[in-house]
Length: 354
View 1 (cartoon, helix red, strand yellow):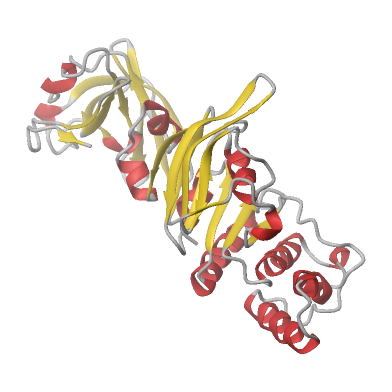
View 2 (tube, rainbow, N blue to C red; view 1 turned 90 degrees about the vertical axis):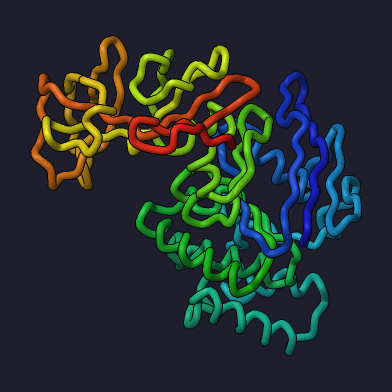
């Protein structure tokens, strides 16, 4: 299903849940709605589902306006955070529910349910009741039930929130593979960055009722368009003034801009370790944190503090060590403009416009 949303606005009393949200989703894509709690993600999902009607703006499925179309007429499958399985029904009957409502023949129902049981890895569990299943198995039943009637759009509201971390990671991979096989346009709400980056073809960042940015996970991560996106995705350092940094003569090119630097854009090293020593600042290590796969280094550059990563294969640093701090790249933002700047003492002197 091809989806277009135009200027969606929705309020609940004095609270404005969405503000002039517009986007387009191509058929067959897996889209992650990502953002902080209360940002408007679930409201957007519910408007697409027909469970809420926008105060203004339009929703179009395949070019047809569906604002007033009831949920059952939209060709949508919905998976809730709480699974919402019928407790008195077996796995087979839960999956078959939508097909029964459609009044399909017993033979058609049996064939379709069996296909989905195999697809979702539930073989052998057909006669069990929901309370006899694990959390991951119940979620698979919920997915199977949602796609059984062959919807054109699948909506998932925090689908893995009620599942423990290990099973959640397994289900992410399973969901991605299943959607690729079935080919249904799918939108899922999450506040988990790792989940969105790992699963989604595209991510929509929602904050305070507005769409901050839409793009592939790589585009969102490498080319953030707003300070919120740069701070929300991954980890980041924020500097009040970057004009004094070595190798960034264009840092003052945008009036009133903030500089945001990801930890992975920074190398911290002892004398002789950094590849471009003339491009490095001089800093003092304040704290060192073990993160399992690397060290997180808190380093002071005058009155500014930055966090960087350091390989476990390099000599361990300690608080008080004097080090070189090589900043490879930074983002520059104000309300209207954004640039990615590279350190000119080691790379191309021209800023990269996004």
